[in-house]
Image (tube, rainbow, N blue to C red; front, side):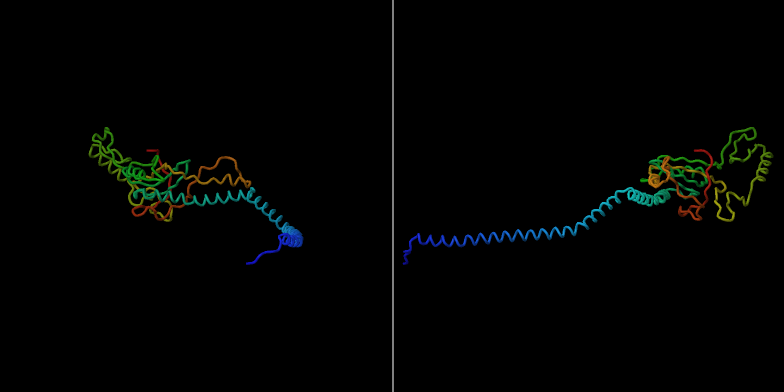
Length: 302
């Protein structure tokens, strides 16, 4: 067993001496560290300022370029260029509208209707399709309208349909006259057949002498070249107009062109129709159809 015989006052006196020696040394070390940190931070700050000064020039150039880019992007020239691009894109997309419309209508055109010309014109939210062709009888004239009324959406159903140009060539029973008391059937343009046998014989002789037989040179049939063919004998050249609930309006380039000095006055055109030209030598209508040329229709609406 060990006993501590040294008084406590002696031990405290030794500790105080050590504290007076170590305390100043710690203070000096802290002060030196603080001075070192201040000097070091100041050096780092000077280095950063130097680097910032070096980068200030490229930064100013970048800001200037950015401002120029913003001016170009938001400037009128870029806006006009974008309008032109959008216009070209819309018009390019619209190129297929007319062929798609005609291809959608074509399956509902009966084979007996020989198409000479077909076109479409926009009218607001609707489209008017005009077809010119030939039919051989009044029954075909009626069936043509029924067939076209079957056009489905999105181009149909047909809002209205009109027709014109049919010439009656079927036989009919005329009114009774002094010469013809029986009402003998005859075709339009034929002479009245009298009841008297001798007079009727003479009328038939006269009619036979006036009737043209053989090659008739009718509407360019039998002629050389690619001239447009009209209606054949006993056929009628008719015009049919359909009003479809389909918007075929072409893009309006007037506003865009006006920005570059073009004439911006007036109103925009309502639209156009596909270019016309010589009729094809073969019909796109499929089997049973015949080709022909474009000729205007005649007569009034029926």
